[in-house]
Image: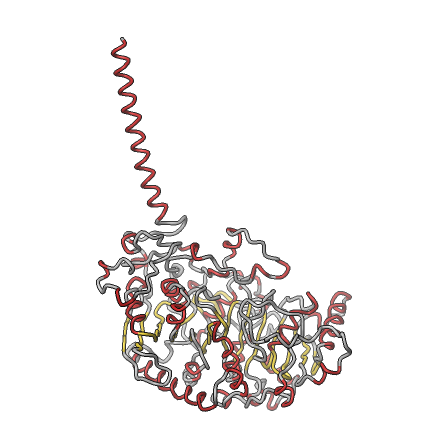
Length: 615
């Protein structure tokens, strides 16, 4: 009996060892798959071999920057992936720096009353999505401009809440497979075109034209809805930066961009809008639901910073006409505040009032000492905007602008090529400005020759210049039916004022972070020396490539102009990014802006189908 008992013990121990071994193996398997995938994100069949063991979704690629030592053979080069995983479909509308879920996950505590939850909160590097954002099911190539102003494919933005909520205001109407835009708005149910005519008559502009002979060119429309006001301004040679947050009016800016209308995500919260001072001739708020009186009028003071001398603020809201006690209280307080800011009412009719700001500092200098709001201190630079808090003070004009009592800008379209008076502020001579115009005209002609076999007349509508400099690329596109979002990298942000002074629009951005736009919103991305700039700062090429893919529409194009070593590196990712719908690489002609050994790579993004997405 004793011998049998010992045998049982040995058998029991052997079983225990086997079970422990199985548990260890299962643990290693779980650990492996846990490190190569994230909850809710689809994993490519063979991405682990392409990413050298790093997390293909939330991790990063290798960071080796020794381009000359990279192998041409992908199998010998673990830096370059054979494939990039596709994000789960739930992320088809992902905006990484405006992701509400991230705020919850990082346990941030934004002040909701100050709209901080609608401001940018970017994921840290270890939480960045390392996958390609997929289009929604049934996605179609967008309707081409100008037809897109009035209709888009419902499958591309499958949200109909606004059509139901705003049905009586004619924002949008679901019509079978399409969504139509009749041109209405919360304040202008009968159409933006009639509203624009009414505003021109209120201001008594010649021929009832709101552009006032080309003197009104840049408009800021806050709380723009689906941007119908901006859409109908285009035929008047007026370009609006239509601005709205990613709020309860779901996807309003996404609809605007799908329509081909200049627009962007943004909010009047705690930080300055990313535009230089004196950028707009007119600001517009049509029932934009903004509390203009909060924090000593700081939001109105931000508009004041952005408006040019003599600029207008068009305000269409119940406070301007309603007679109930609460609206009267708001109106009286707003009137007193704007009067103390030296603004004057130039017209008031029915439900709309139009203010104008002064053309010089004279009124400010006549105010009683200690008046509120105060003038900003002399060390405040009103053109510095990236991650800068708003200030509850009035930005006075420069001595030159005060003396000239205006901007000195010529009317549109002549201002596109006329040297702006603020050129000297950024250290650019008139000769250099004219030379820049000529260089970009030649470069754009060469780009279009390079794409002549694949680009049709209406292939492009929404264009982004990722390093806009003086706006030469956008200016060279003046005869094409496109609009350009000119992006000034933070270190070159001072030059954005030149772009606005030329009658163009743009924003400041740091390309080490994700851009504030929906996926699939641009037809063409132009990246001149962008990768060289982020290389100097140690930021990830791969993160930027994935971000560019997120912004780019299927069948859209990228033009990357940079050093040969950088182009060689980027070219290795073309197939993994699914940008191999068409590819061209050339050595461009040398000009005054060229760097040594420069190359131009143009690639076309494929339209994904279910078979491609499953790879």
